[in-house]
Amino acid sequence: MAYSLVQILALLYFPVFLTFCSSTNGKFSEQSPMIISTKRMEKMTRLRFYFHDIPSGKNPTKMRIAGPPKTAADSFGSTFMVDSPLTEEPEPTSKLVGRAQGMYSFASQHDAGLLMVLSFAFLEGTYNGSALSILGRSPVLDNVKEMPVVGGSGLFRFARGYSLSKTVSFSQKNQNAVVEYNVTVVHF
Ligand SMILES: *[C@@H]1O[C@H](CO)[C@@H](O)[C@H](O)[C@H]1NC(C)=O
Ligand SMILES: *[C@@H]1O[C@H](CO)[C@@H](O)[C@H](O)[C@H]1NC(C)=O
Image 1 (cartoon, rainbow, N blue to C red):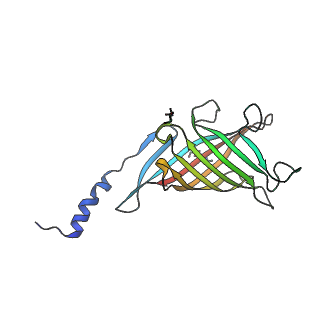
Image 2 (tube, helix red, strand yellow; image 1 turned 90 degrees about the horizontal axis):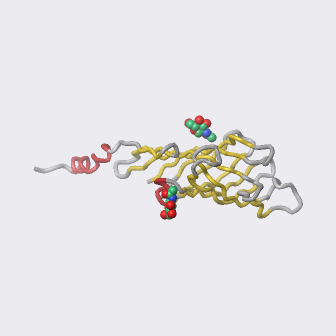
Image 3 (tube, helix red, strand yellow; image 1 turned 135 degrees about the vertical axis):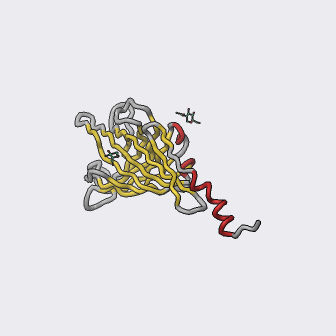
């Protein structure tokens, strides 16, 4: 019995259309399959976590490493190195899901705009050992900041997407801030 080329291709790719299923990994992430072609299936993953900015105390999460001398810490050119815990809930004592490591600079001469260069290195569950790369502008005064996800490693190879973040708490006393991140990525 002879099959046409179209029939053979339809049979080959049929299983791709049958694998619609979502997987969740606690509150931290949710993944659903996304078909962009009949040959390859890409996945879309949403992550939510909380970034802890702790500027002072015994273990500060950031340090000013460059910038113009004898000016305010937040003037044009000021650059900070960062290593901040990422947790599952806003409380600093909640489960650690990763670390944000990288740097940011005050990159605007006209307003408060940062250039952010960050790796989100994940430490929890399925994504332990995988990382996402953020490179983009963070407008300090905007309530919600959007930044591009430009790549990833491990399970996030070929990742692209965006993050939305907003400060959910800030302490006047010690300047500690908690920033909520929703990250959406498409990857293989
Ligand atoms: C993550 O992976 C590292 C290295 O493989 C391992 O030591 C660690 O226990 C893992 N963490 C979790 C929470 O599974
Ligand atoms: C993140 O997503 C949740 C649930 O959709 C939403 O309530 C929250 O406002 C979002 N946060 C940001 C920073 O976009």
